[in-house]
Structure formats: structure tokens, C-alpha cells
Length: 497
Image (tube, rainbow, N blue to C red):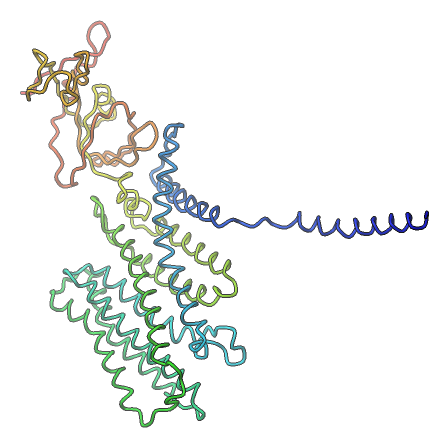
């Protein structure tokens, strides 16, 4: 009996000692990141990162109270969500589509995988068959959007370029399938492959010429722009006519459902290309939109964006099936690189990506005319900003000049008969609202290129105005008597002659 008890104690101690390392190993593992938590983290990283870059560029950060915290979080979510979708369409989704519908297809993987290891994608084959047409299309779209020609110029040029590169991809995939299925492999020589790619690139050269003309300030007629946009279609006819010139069809009938496979692959490639075009259009709209109309997309940023998009989609397409987290991390880091490059490579502070996004979304950067309280006007006078003072006299008989009764909210008076706004007011123009978050307005006086803060309570109203159509302001700062003999603010203003 005692021996049995002793054996049980020994076995129990051994079992506990074997479980201890397992428990310690589990405790030392890094916890997995939930998908929803990761999504919100990316939203706040993009939104918060852009806001941090923007306020670092203007040299100011708003004082956010508890009441303004929700507004600040909503702003981060809106901007972060927009950037997340745009960067996903540009840097992640195309590579995923290629990986799912081209590289990992049961038949097309014969063309895009390694011969010795058919389960692993061949980087050189992916670059030759997919990345080269995609790079041509992306470069053409950059040139088209940079030119910003007449109506229909960008859609027409993008459609022509997409048709040309898709035809080239289809020719390569069909030739690869037939060569793999043929008992006596034969096909186009390396020289023929190079000639086809040179032909497609040659018919894209007019778009490069149009781009260079825009860079050097030359203006081209609409007819020349349309011809340059349509020319890539010529390479389609050349590629489609190549099949009729072949001496003999190899692999004929040995590829099952060949045309169905090719159509599915080309549709996937075209969808990825169109999503990338939509993301490009979004960023070009951000840069060229807004009331400031400051400059164009910097050339250095354009070249960097093209290179990063091509390299990132190549990495995602090769890594996605086996290393999905690595593919997602590569696209995320590339997006952060482009976001930071938009701030660093901007030609001037108002032309950076964060500033243009804040202006386009309506959170800052608007040229405005402001209506201020008397105190707000006096504060701007102390900052040597021209301010025009006006006096609103109280209404008589409880009616406004427009016939609205006193208790009506449109009359500007409260129900007790007390005027909501009356007395001395101020108005100024030529100001740019850089920030409306927090308890202050951050304003920039463009004439002196100075930033000025103003409490929100002193801003009654503001309206956007084009930069070249500012309201003429009659400066009344010198005529305004700051205080009366008793030391109180005077409600009077010297009439302008």
C-alpha cells in the first residue's frame, strides 16, 4: 500500500514538472492580434499620423477638451478610413487578386511557378508576365492624370493602355500554356518576346512626350492629346495579328478550357488595374482639388509612388498565399512610406499631402472672410491685421427690417426680446483657416504669412471665398477708440468719410 502511494506521488510530481514548461511556454507566447483591433489600429495610425504631420507642418497643436475629443476621434476615423481604402486599392488588393486568380490558378500556375518547385511562384515569371504590363499601365495613368487634359482624355487613354497591356498578358499566358502542354515545346524566342514588349512600350511613348511637355510648360492642342491617348491601341492589333503569322500551332487542343482560363485571368488583371486607377484618381483629386490650387504633384513623389506601388504589389502577390501577415505588413509599411513622403517631398507647406487632405475634407486650409465680435476685431488689430468695424443698431417696435417678428429665431433675438447679436462687429478678409479643432481658430494672414490664433467664441461666422476674389476691407483699426474715459470698451466707431 505504501509502495503504491509512493509511485502515485512520483508520477504526479513528474506530470506536474512536464506541464510546467508547457504552461510557461504558453505564457511567453505573444498574444494574437484580433482582426477588428488591427483594423481600428490601422485607422488610427493613418488618421492620427496624418493629423500629426499636418499640425507639425503648421507648427501648432490644438487644445482638445473632453467635448472636442469625440470630434477629434471622428476626424481620425474619417481620414484614416479614406486613406486605408485608397492605399489598400493601390498597394494590397491588386497583389491579392493576382495571387488568387493568376499565380495560384491550377492551370496558370504552370506558367508563373518554378519548374523545379511548382508550388512556389517564380518571381522572374511574375515580373515578366504581370508586373511589366502593370507597370506600363500605372505609368500611363500617372501621365494621363498629370496632364489633366480635355473631357474624356483620361478615361480614353486609360482604356487604350489597359487594352494594350491586357492583350500582351493574354498572349504571354496563352503561349505559356500551349508550350507547357506541347510534347515538343516550342514557342516564341527571347527576341520575339522582347520585340513585343518594345512595341507596346513604343506606342506608349507619346504619353511620355505629353507628360514632358506639361513639365516644361508647353501647351498641346486637344487633337494631339487625343491621338496620344489612343495610340496604345495600335499595339493591340499588332499583338492579335501575331497568331495568324505563326507557322504552326503547338499544343493545340491539349489545354482544357484554355479560353475560359485566359478570360478569367485577364478579367482579374483588369479589375486590379481599375482599382489601382481609382486609388490614383483619388490622390490626384486631393492634390489638384481645393480652393488653394497650389502647384502640381511633385515629380519626385510621382516617381516614388510608381516605384513603391509596383514593388509592393509584386511582394504581396508572391507572399500572400504562404505568408499573409508578411504581405499585409509590406503593404502597410509602404503606405506609411508614401504618407510620410507626401509630407517630405511637397514643394511647399500648403502643397503637402496632409495639407491637401485637410483642405479637401473641409477641416482646414480654406480661404475665408470672417465676421467677428468686437473683442475678436480688437485682437486682430493688435496683430496688425486690417479689420472693418460695423455697428448693428437694435430694432424698433419688436420687428426686424425684413418683417420677422421678435420671437422668431430668424430675427436674431431671443424670446425675452433681448437681441442675440447687436452692437459693434468686425469683419476681415484674406485669412486662411488652418484649424478649427479645439478651443481656438488657427488663422493665417496671407499678406504677412503669419499664423494667428483666435478664440472660437469671438468668431460669429465665416464664409469661404476664392483667393483672387477677396472682399475689400476698409481698415478701421486706427479710427476705433479702444476705451472710453472710464476705461471700458467703447461701442462707438468713427464714421468713414
